[in-house]
Figure 1 (tube, rainbow, N blue to C red):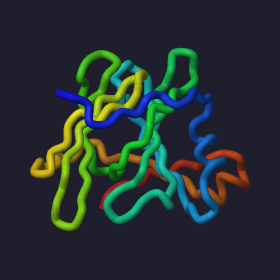
Figure 2 (cartoon, helix red, strand yellow):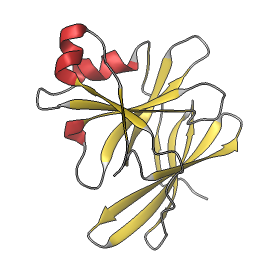
Figure 3 (cartoon, rainbow, N blue to C red):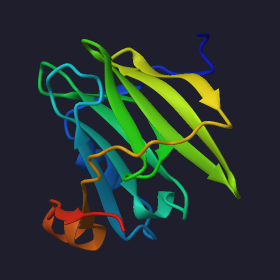
Length: 160
């Protein structure tokens, strides 16, 4: 399979939540967090999005992969809903993330490889079905409170 899109790691950060909160626009009301092992290396990773980056069909989630030194590598942004994706192990250190994009009635499935080397879209199928992931858990925090307190008070969220 040839690569149809690549995002190389952009930076190393120590606190992805603080980084995203600091960059959030004033219009953003909340921060969404998915905590999963996206690259199957045994450490919990983060996907973060502010509410202003979400429409009725997609959120732009920034992926931060946990590093052995305790920091995180920002590997790119993926458009998906926090409850509409699939995640499987491709091999040690590489996850396979399947996301769905909808435009009107057309749904396109996009497959990505996720690793410390970056986020790589490897396949796009406009006729593909989009099997949902069995783990729809994500968390939200109110940005106004996070800015005042200097931390997020995470609350579980789910769909519908």
